[in-house]
Length: 288
Image (cartoon, rainbow, N blue to C red; front, side, top):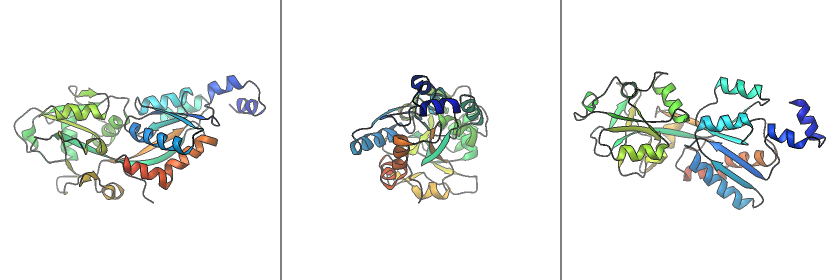
């Protein structure tokens, strides 16, 4: 890899080098990955291109795993991820000659949602775990009406899926009858049309959906339930303080330490102007 970088500096074999390493001084920036970050990423790109007419930013989704795989393949400049990069992904990147750089770009409170007509208003982490592991199968077991629980989940390439699996399910397997949805909007639509449905995803996606209800979450049976949103917006303090238990950082990854246009773009996303757009998108800005 060092030899290739030297050749690039000397202006030789440029085409061969750019196959291995994204063009960090390019006027086009490619961003791929997390569906959770997709809307925020598109808002960032739109505003940044207005401020910098000479820059083109292409943002696509597909899931955190897809974005990180593209990073290793050298087909994206930035990977958006709603989870931390895994050790095996770092190892694979190193084999390809990359050393991923991590940037925390925002926080996200993950909401647990049910149909608006479901009488249940709160669940504990233990109950959510029991539901998604398939140990709790009727709403009457958690204070609701006697009706089967219909589990809606995300695809395995999703960072949200991975976070729930690791943090809430303690790396247990989702129940076999969990129905896989392609994106949080699909989860919202499914739960909104299914009285027995339950789903999860970034709170920002559900706040304005009148067909679903965001539940309060208790850390344990003795705790008071905390909601990720109130008064129609995400509760920043609940995430910053950790009183709402299901929160996470959102990330950008680059294959090597960024420079040029890519460095400038990431710095802008982390600036006051960029973090204002985080608020507009319904996510939690980084605490200053």
